[in-house]
Image 1 (cartoon, rainbow, N blue to C red):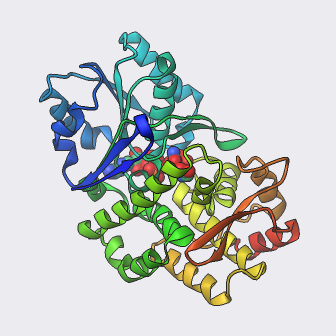
Image 2 (image 1 turned 90 degrees about the vertical axis):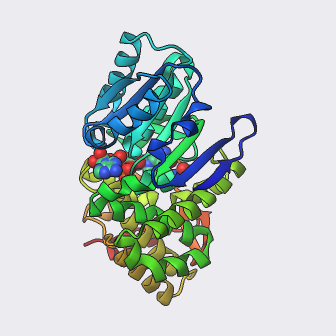
Length: 360
Ligand code: NAD
Ligand code: GLY
């Protein structure tokens, strides 16, 4: 088992990574504030993994409340969030009830936001079951729901007390979702780890074939980056913004098409290409670097072109980005493969041109 710690003083917490962790009640025990537990999951994950988690809790003499949400990004909203509050209140859950989010990033983001709000904060554990959630969304405490005008616009920073990434759950993940998770894995290499880019180029076919040892290594290396960045900049005052490579363009795709049309990871992949092409237009990347990034994204089974929303519509949607400061758009761009920067230097004409060049 790989174990990392997100170092946040008294709010530090472990990330455990290995196959079979759902069957390890001893890993949960010390992180439960009481015998009262609520599991938040969804209609797809519940039939796959709820029983095994409940069996582990039964070994600790715990019978959890179970809240099963509808599946999908389109349900990451107030109405669904309220279902969690309704269930917690109806079952008389207390401030010391521990909420366990069992599922992908949508369940994790909504479960985390519910935990941040319920009675002003209840203990929270992430059990991510998608690659994307294991490498990114379960770590770092960003929780949110979507608004029709913008992705993840309503939310809170709220750290879990434990992350259990059971690699065996990836066996049932659809291929398209596996690829979506690889978009966030590639991101860590591009923003800060050239050696990881080389590693991913070598192992991408085997990762796509779900070689479990390599997947575990990819989750571990990704979480190591995320844990370092979050420890240094929990509230995204600086370095953490680099984790948004491709996301300003990508969120425009997700909001512009309607939530759930493109997967988050797919939108991030096409957005990463837009950021790479823009970086080349500014003279920061060579054409060869852009081809290298395109080849890696393609090898992961991800799109390198965005939908034709029109550059103006992209820009309108991108102006809702959380990195906007004093009305100025700030983008994560690449100064080199393996080195990202946040910059407001790109003129809108260049941003438009990069978007147009990267639309199907
Ligand atoms: P998701 O939660 O929608 O999961 C993808 C699909 O896989 C869903 O249908 C889900 O039910 C299903 N699924 C989950 N686990 C499965 C398994 N083991 N086997 C079979 N099917 C399974 O999507 P996601 O890609 O995990 O997460 C995307 C969300 O995460 C977006 O809303 C995005 O905004 C958010 N996100 C948050 C952060 C953060 O820091 N909080 C970071 C990145 C992304
Ligand atoms: N996924 C971006 C972040 O956690 O900051």
